[in-house]
Image 1 (cartoon, helix red, strand yellow):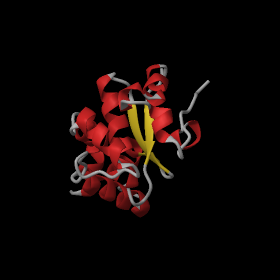
Image 2 (image 1 turned 90 degrees about the horizontal axis):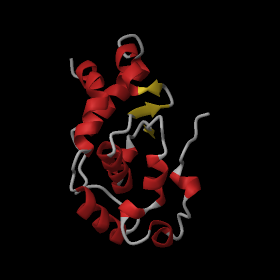
Image 3 (image 1 turned 45 degrees about the vertical axis):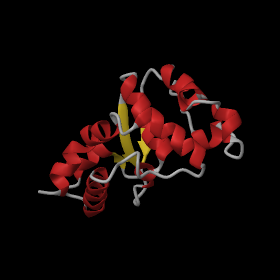
Image 4 (image 1 turned 90 degrees about the vertical axis):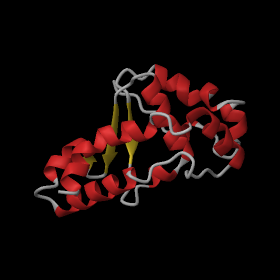
Amino acid sequence: DPVFWICLFALNQHQPAEEVGTSPKTGPFNAALRFATDGAVMVVDRNIHPFSRIWCIFEVAQITDIKKPFELVSSLGPLTTLATASLADDGAAELVRKVADALDEVSATGAKSSNENDRQRILLEVADKGSRQLLRSRAQAGKTVGHS
């Protein structure tokens, strides 16, 4: 049976320091990810907000480090599927182009957090290591379609 970790519901968003601890790597997300036999997904909206959030970038870096499968998905479906479907679907083509453009801008150093201390601790852990590479690899087909 599939099990989903949804940070919004799994962590007390009003007391993140108590939930995460002294280091982002010791937080409960990492424990949950290690038990995720099928990997992880990142849900992107039409504005591709997760790419601008430091916690999302950190989670991608963690997924990369422990070599778990990773998929970008949207309300239209998995991005890898949309890349081929976008040839016939204008909505899918637009989303694939937006994701491809957003991938060019992904940067932990420019990412935001609602808590500046979290942002600084994550920057020390991530420093853009692996995040951009993994996001690009998962959406490479989309970029090819989006910029052809």
